[in-house]
Length: 92
Image (cartoon, rainbow, N blue to C red):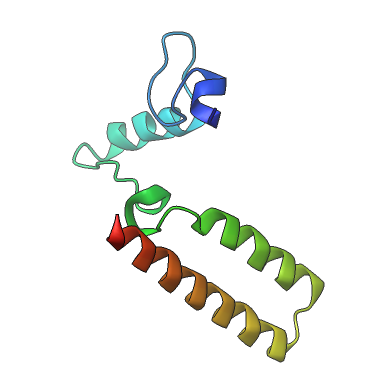
C-alpha cells in the first residue's frame, strides 16, 4: 500500500473532502500566474524507481560525516546507484 492509497488522495490533486497544501498553493499560483502548469519533475519522471531509498541512505551518510572525503563518497554513491537503477529501468 502506498501513501496515496493510505491517505485516500494524491497530495497535489483535489480530494472530495480536503485540499492538500500543494493544491492550495497551486490554486494561489494560478490566480497570480494563469499560464503556470504543474509537472512532476522528481517523482518517477526523471528518477528511476528506488532512488528515494538511495537519497535516504545518502542523507544518513551526510549526517554522520560532512568531511570532504565523505562528501565525495556520497556523490559517488548517488552516481553509481542512479546509473544502476536507470539501466535496470531501461531493461523493463
